[in-house]
Amino acid sequence: MAKVYNIGKLPVDLPGRLAANPGVILKPDFFAFQLLPGRRGDYAIVYAGGALAVIPDNARIVEDADESNITGSQIVNGLYFFGGGEAMAAQYATWSPCVYPTEYCAPYLAVYDGTLRVIKIPSGSCANMNLTGVAYDGEYYYAVGGGNYPPFDEYGLIHYTGVVVLNKDLEIAGYGLIDVVDDAGHKLGMYRSGPKRYVDGYIYSLAYDVERKGLLYLVKFSYRPSKSLCQRSPSIKPEYVATAAEDFDGRAIPLLLEDLSVAYWDGRYVKWRDLRVEAPEVPYIRASGGRLYVAYNADGEFVVESPVKYRARGMGFIDWTGAAIVFEGLSAGSRIYYVDLKP
Image 1: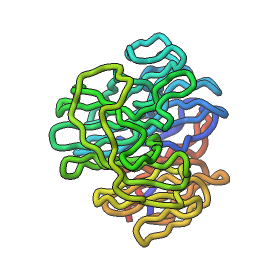
Image 2: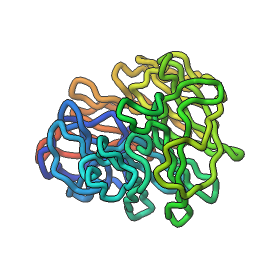
Image 3: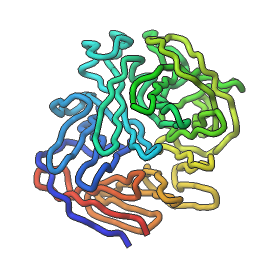
């Protein structure tokens, strides 16, 4: 049975809808989510005790303008990581010397350990450093971004996958670029590839075949920190491990669990081991306490299908804590609910 708590009201009108990318719940009344205010463009928004702010740099929300986003999230070693890229301020290269003039984008990484800190990453661009997940080897945190084949687009912008490495004090210890072709010759997309796992000297990740859509791979790679900024060629070659799915729908972010099993959406069902959870709309797929969490927004309702059944008018998201945030609406005065979904 879901436990529902009224945590406040939306202080201002928000245009548009929630994006399918991650939201994170740091405390019941302190969370971040991605807003899609128009047909395109994203905003990463933090709600803190009734106040709203756009991160990493506060900005006015405008329809069809891309200011920032949340492309990935993960709880690792008790720390909550999430991040993405900021577009508008990057045209001035305010913190990223590697931003190319036609892209106007710079990445950030947010870390919550009781205090929220936002780390602006002076390397790469949104094409290769937007966070997908974080691996931890006991000494370093490897925040892996997302890039797609081909490695360069028509403007010469890099689309390799980036890595930024943090030490235990959350200081930047290095950077790297992962090739978007693995050792088996698969042309990879790693942009929406979900959490990462560190096992026996390797970082494990999911990637999909950009030419043969629907094929989801498990890959691994090893990496140690390098301080080289603004790299234009990869030093890390992913190794093909296995084909995780042949019916993968890339609109939903897949999930790599601690045991390297994979949960993903095939366009109708979320599949994990022998479990099948129906999801007629693009779902959020999360795991907490060994349980699979599946939810989606459809026809003005927020619907949770696993591990408990829950429906509410409005829109919402689930996160890695086994909870959901539900907005009654996105107009000023709309109630916001924290929902504990742990059975």
